[in-house]
Length: 263
Ligand SMILES: C[S@@+](CC[C@H](N)C(=O)[O-])C[C@H]1O[C@@H](n2cnc3c(N)ncnc32)[C@H](O)[C@@H]1O
Image (cartoon, rainbow, N blue to C red; front, side, top):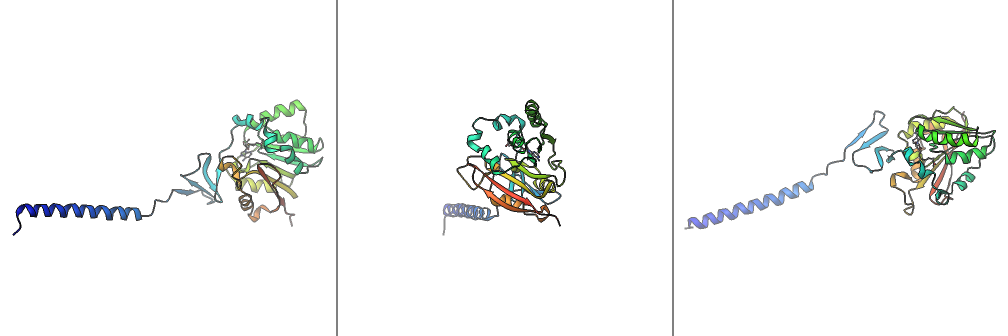
């Protein structure tokens, strides 16, 4: 016969054991559960995705797998004007690579305070035209001060929108975007309009920090791989074909596309 005390001890052990077993199985069960998928929403076109988890320098908005960067404010204009920029980015080499000719109609899209617009204006000369487009009037005001001071009549300032650069169809020999494309809020809509504005054979040049290169110490969402640029230029309705990629600059690649002749 078991004593009352030994039965109580035995019951106590059983309770502890079943408690432990419950804990082990419950933990195993919860850890085997699928982790909760991060919230992803799409816009009405299905083209853009919005994710809660994203880079702190990004918009939380994704296009073709890439997070769009936040737009650089006009408060950052002194960074565009910094004296070490020529050494770091070799802008004079970039403008040489573009082989601009006097009399050409070109565009500096996302011109900012116009550092590159002025260089382009000297290359196309008084018989040419440079359309300097930006969505921030404050940036265009900084550029207007310079063109007025220098008397550069070939520069025309254009206030664009996030979806439309307000350019004339089939009017441009070349359109340049230096450190700009990755921060478009509507890259697809912008490219539709940009491609329309090119003459047959006209060139669109993307200048982006090389994401393939870990030595390029720029925030991730402000860098793009060549493959990603090509992917985003692939919609056939753009009517563009890749022409060449130049890796001459110290930190950026220049990826050039050409407008196909219309039938
Ligand atoms: C990093 S700054 C580069 C300025 C200039 N390209 C340079 O390298 O000196 C980017 C500029 O692109 C402009 N931008 C961003 N989205 C734009 C859009 N959809 N259309 C025109 N400009 C845009 C911004 O307002 C800003 O001035």
